[in-house]
Image: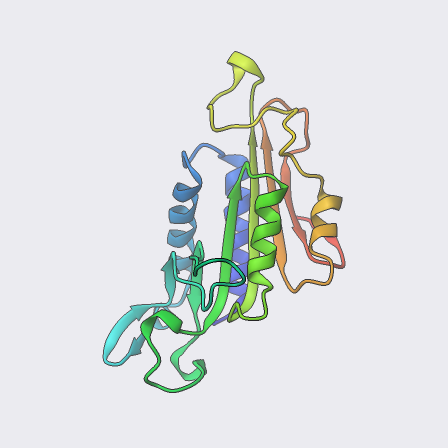
Amino acid sequence: MAIDTIGKVIENFCTEFVNFPYLCYTEHGLHARFYCLLYNALPTNQRYIEWKGMKICVIQKEYRTATNLGKSKRQNWDIAVLQPLQEQHGDRNYAYDYLSLNSVIEFGLNAGEKHLIDDIKRLCHRESNVKNKFIVHLFRISGPGRKRISHRDVSPNSKKLLKLERVQELIQNNDVIVYFGLSDSTRQHQSGVWRLDDNKITAL
C-alpha cells in the first residue's frame, strides 16, 4: 500500500472541502466522499485482498479497534485501510475482526479540542494496531445569526475553533499527522489546508 497515495488523497479531499464545503451535509457524508476518492485512487490490484477464500475490500468503514484502547469497550475507526495479506501478522486463522491495519483516518467536522484529543489518544495507543495514523480536522464557518448557511456550521466566534499552534502542541511526541482544513464564508478567518506533525506546520 503506497502511503503517498493515501496522503495525496487526503490533501485533495481537504482542498475540495475548503473550495466546496457544502458537498456533504454531515461528517458521515464526508466519510463516504473520502472513501470514494481513496477507492478510485488505488490501483485496481490493490483494492481487494483474498482472505480465507473471501474477497475483502482493503478500505473499511467503521472497522473495529483491536482492543478497547483504555475505554469500556471496543470502538470503531472512521476509515481503515487493511494491510496487504502478506503483511498480516500472527496465525492465519485470526478473526476477520482483528486484521492488521495499514492506515486509519479519523475525521472531525466542527469538532472541538476534546474530540481531537480523543482521536490522538486512540490512534497513538500502544494497542491500536495501526501503522500510519491520520486525522482530518475540518471547520465550516458561516453566520453569525440568520446569516448562518446551516445550523451545522459554527460561527466565526465559536469556542470550538482551534489555532494551528494548539493543534501542533497536542500532537507533540505522537506519531500522527493532522490535516487541518478551514472554510470561512465570513472571511474572518483564513481559509486553507495545513498539514501538521510534531515538527512543523505546512500550508498546502
